[in-house]
Length: 182
Image (cartoon, rainbow, N blue to C red; front, side, top):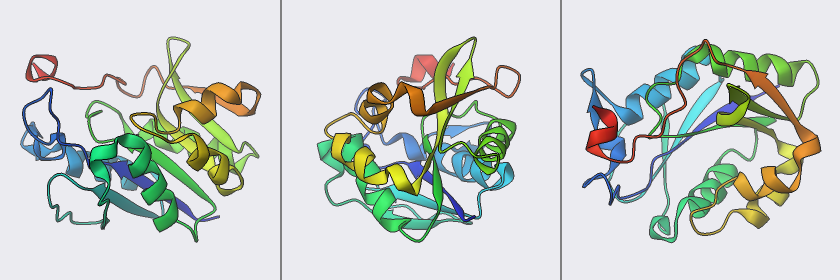
């Protein structure tokens, strides 16, 4: 089973004041942290969906999203198209630098045990990352519009979701502003 990690890193980071993919935390860009998260977590390969800022990323294939300004939905669609040969993808937004690779490993383990949609949970609430098997990608694409990525698909299909507790693997916090990073 081929599992591709997809880093959604195309946004301009308007609230942050610059593209979040380029923001550094502990001496490492957010985009590099996300790629390392997916690699260390067990993904066979990693794609980075770029847009507002041109990116070069070691250990990943960068895919350009010319419609990045349409929102995260366009990046999800571009990423799924680029991963078309995979059996499943693990989606992670670039602005979640506190996630740990154990969360990715747990999602992949649940997928290998037969789950087709797996979501990390923190204190019982769904968070990032999310794994989605290829059989669901058409439905994900259909709902991925504007600033909504896979959320519409997940909300419409709660019975498909296998929740996996990841409380002890890191924090799912999105970093939307410089103050949030502090």
